[in-house]
Image (cartoon, rainbow, N blue to C red; front, side):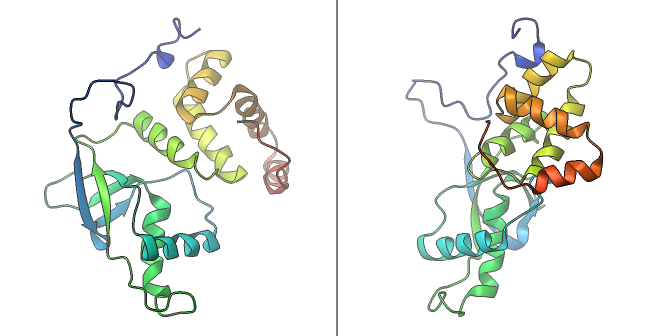
Length: 205
């Protein structure tokens, strides 16, 4: 199927980790003040406030271990961040928490390290960047439904089997989970909302 479906053919990786060559990676890491960062639209819309507080404490105590991924559209403009939404929100939140219980003696996060892309990523590249980011902490079912719907629409023109395969490649989903989300999107909105609110019974990634 991959041979027939152009959407599944390998494309140039944003960051190639498969090469065994020892040549240094060309990249631009930059420390960017929080006020110079803007968040790109993100599939994750439901964010656990307690998780943000925990992450804020980790940033204050241990520093930033993983860079954000972004792009600066203009030389003097802000950096648009595609991966690192929760770290950015936690850094902002640290300014409110410092001095409170558990945050005594800590200093707020004033800047974050961003790995700058040398081009503005395409919508397909953004989906893949954010899918890998979300794999570390799964989206809520509601956000998964919307993320799937956006990607499904972007792959219009393929037959259903190839379309599912392309969505799985973009979002890192297993076929079972993708078909399940596809079925959920055919339900009336009220029923789909109840499905999203059900406690998880297992993973089908």
